[in-house]
Image 1 (cartoon, one colour):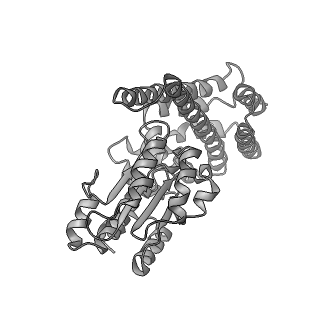
Image 2 (cartoon, rainbow, N blue to C red):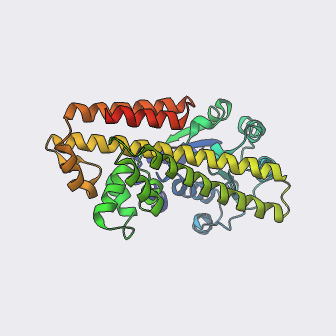
Image 3 (cartoon, rainbow, N blue to C red):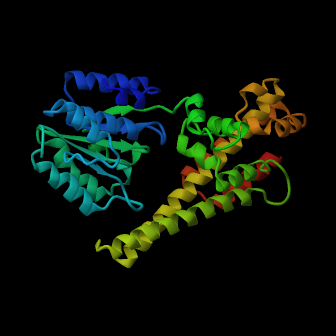
Length: 357
């Protein structure tokens, strides 16, 4: 095992063991790297692909070196990432399905990596099935998914799963060095759930506004829930604008896509991001009430919001421990309700009223 693979999986012991075993016995034709964003799936996939190519090359060191570059100039490593909200069906067909029928340009193996595989449309996933079922002996596919439940079961079941868990807090903190003062970075790392990308979002201006907006959910008056909804709406609008710009650039470059397709994909990106940020906000609210219970019980060292300890201690004096725990349950119940597509405004307004009571 090379240093690159070891480094990319240093906090992912189960994944490392599985990948080491695969390299020793010979890699299978398809893998599904699944786990939260920021858990190291992408780096591990690149290192694993480099080892697969190096093992079948005349000059293993040179093949490994080129495969590890990002972007990689190795002709037998094909890396696909969505440029917009979703993968293009044509791109999956041409660069993966059709390309997999061509023999390696050098060495004896080809590796195809599909980043954010859950962003493939059903049409793309169904088209990929035959390649997964009857792959050429030299082809290896690696699918990366942060939301594997969005993949068709027929696709997921044909891949060997490699599990990536959330990163430990210390690893997230290390990735955030220089991104914020130590107290805020420590809080963001604890609140991230092991997701480096989420921690960085919490350290951004929109993330800071989101955190600030959840602290008043349990207070009466002023409709505090509207601040949380506004943060989610702003995030959705930003995602829509960015997606629309990327798709329009592709249209200008000659990619066949109608104006309606651009509009629909941009709106889907907005809905996904709005829902995601709203859920993050509710997670932050649950963490806040959990921290109130911890501080009230005399254990401030386990609080997630380490940069808000003074505020926590002040509020904890006014809150009963049982009430704080009940507040966590109410927030989690609201998250489940939103999964059922109930009205976001009504659900948040009801939550604020129940918390204030």
